[in-house]
Image (tube, rainbow, N blue to C red):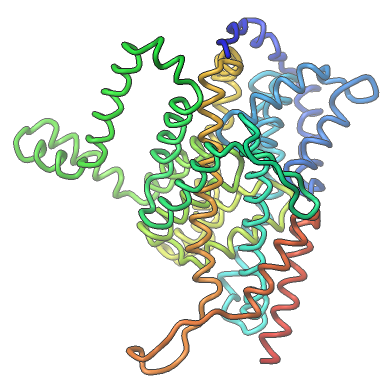
Length: 463
């Protein structure tokens, strides 16, 4: 393979349109409609945009080539691809203001729905009827995540060589064993170590370059050695960050004061919520479900903002809306501020802050970074690194889901606590398995959640 020539940044920047009141109103109308009726996930959103905004029989916002270029780059960028494509189409039509209006109107209906459902969940979740409904919903979400990971694995593992080829059910699989090894490695690491997902993805990208492009490494030994040394240094600084910070703080006044300021800011729950969501939104490669390992590690395990069960229920609420599953972050912000202030008003503000933090990177990637990303999209080294990252993303999602599934399926039996034993709830395991089978055959997630909730409620009251 050889490195592809860089794209002309000015040519790509030429996609950007100019804003006018009529264009902004047109953008708002279309994306508000998409946000209201776009049930079915990213594929439905993309299909509706292509059908109504591209070509001679549409509103003719762009030609097919521009649309496909935008789609390809949005799939490469971190973040929810369909949301970023919508922001891109608004940018093409009416510039930066068009991008802002497209994203805001597309997300507004989903935001309002998630906030409303969050209110019902936390206000009435202890009622037997609501508790019974989520008894069935929780395992359905596990099945949906597993089904989505299954589809993502089929896509990510076929890059590179065709080492293994087989048919499983109705699906043909083509697998590069190097990528399979990266996927399994990420899965095991997530289950056993629960590392920072960004570091996990970065390591997978580097390993993929080593496995796929040893010729390039040999030809660029000096550059690679310097980069590797820098990477090792950064990894060491991250690993021993607490010890280093304490040592510097004790011996040097100014860095200690700076560290104190940083600690004070991080101690502010509003700043912490916004920065964490900003961080998460900047690194969710491969789509909205990549937020699962981030949320599971930090929000559930380290910050304690949600229980594992509440997090899975939050994903279900996000799946019931016509918008992106990343809107689950709104549920997190709502719950956090509800616990702190005990006020629905502050909870709604928390939901809004979480949403802005999670989706802000998507606006920045399109309006600021898009031309530069377009230049390197066809670079072989970048593409190979993304092969490894995408495989690791699937492994991390599955690994995080293992922990969530344990909480969803486990039943504690026996008393007192020292003699209690854990067993699996066969009803919940069965619901997850059936959901997986139906979802991988094309059944809409919203139908599965509602059906699973109804079935789970029936079992809950009968048993």
